[in-house]
Figure (cartoon, rainbow, N blue to C red):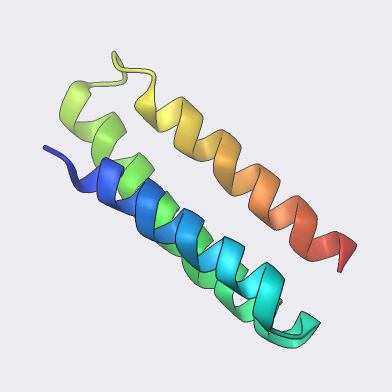
Length: 73
């Protein structure tokens, strides 16, 4: 039930650490991995709740934001 919570937490920590410690190439790689992780969680959330819970929308928004910052780098 709390897979999405773990995804948010671990992904957020990875993005913060990447922004502080790594170069732009590594930022893109970590951003892609976090986006893939969030995509998996969003699809599972949407499927499990039959699109009735807003969690998948929030994760999809986070994916868009992560990918847009990757393009800006």
